[in-house]
Length: 381
Ligand SMILES: CC(C)=CCC/C(C)=C/CC/C(C)=C/C=C/C(C)=C/C=C/C=C(C)/C=C/C=C(C)/C=C/C=C(C)/C=C/CC(C)(C)O
Ligand SMILES: C[S@@+](CC[C@H](N)C(=O)[O-])C[C@H]1O[C@@H](n2cnc3c(N)ncnc32)[C@H](O)[C@@H]1O
Figure (cartoon, helix red, strand yellow):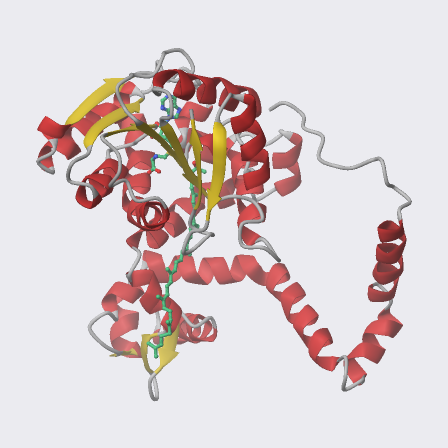
């Protein structure tokens, strides 16, 4: 990965640094912390900060509690209504005591809810998860990420050996995609397909495709985004470009969906090949953040070359700082993509710069309903 300068050396002793230095030494002082927790005016802030730090310390336990619920299909099992602990324990092949621990932990995290003695139902977050099957699939595939993160410093030093996440995304190891078989791309293609509906919802609500004639989805996976676009815009012709192993899956999926006559599918690698022409809008959905800056610059140039004058690029993916404030999405993708071995999360401002450098104009950042799922940028060729 090329090194990227991300710090500002020009204002090392600025006023803001001095203010932050004073703040940091105060916050780092045990005496100040004791005082802040004791004083009624500052106590709510002290409790909030303590809780935030606690969440960071134990987040892995939260994630693994969720992973156990997903693995045991607890939420599915409670979809129809609450259930007693003995039944849940016997379904999960564990002792009732162990099941109580899991259910209590999950209830504390709002995944489940205690509904009387030794009886549990869905909690608000467990119920919300059922509405988005993509989330459970993400939780399952985190096994690879967390295996790589067992030694986070080794991962950051590039000394990790197994690289399970990179194997899960084999195009991160084989950039041309030449050696990728259908079997090797099938797991990530299935994950992208099951998580695509929540992406398509926010992207197509932010930028409806009703005014367009033909959409080319580059890195379009099994065609799930095209299917959502086709439902929204019945006049739209469809094109898909992806690696050969992936388009083989897309071909079958789109034919099954009755879209064979509306779609043209082109196998290839955007590292090596030109993109097909003919579309007046080209989408890059969850594609750009997978690639380093130089590769993105080349990809954007190819997208621009494939568009007519005034054609539209539609870029959708989670972006840094999109939700403002504390930014778990940035932290997640920063480490995730490091484990994957290429790419990086970018802010809308950084993407705007890359788009301008590739010759795009009228770059607009569109608000989406749920920025943590995806933000959207459109630009004209
Ligand atoms: C009913 C009563 C009384 C009140 C209602 C109150 C109310 C209005 C509640 C709101 C309920 C509601 C509608 C909730 C909606 C919840 C939603 C939409 C939740 C969505 C959550 C999304 C999550 C958790 C997304 C997680 C995404 C992850 C982890 C994504 C990972 C992505 C990866 C790994 C991508 C990889 C691709 C690569 C390689 C980077 O290119
Ligand atoms: C993270 S997935 C996103 C899939 C889909 N756009 C979605 O949002 O569900 C990235 C996609 O880009 C494709 N891809 C990666 N490298 C590629 C390349 N060099 N040429 C063409 N497609 C590529 C992958 O096969 C995969 O389908």
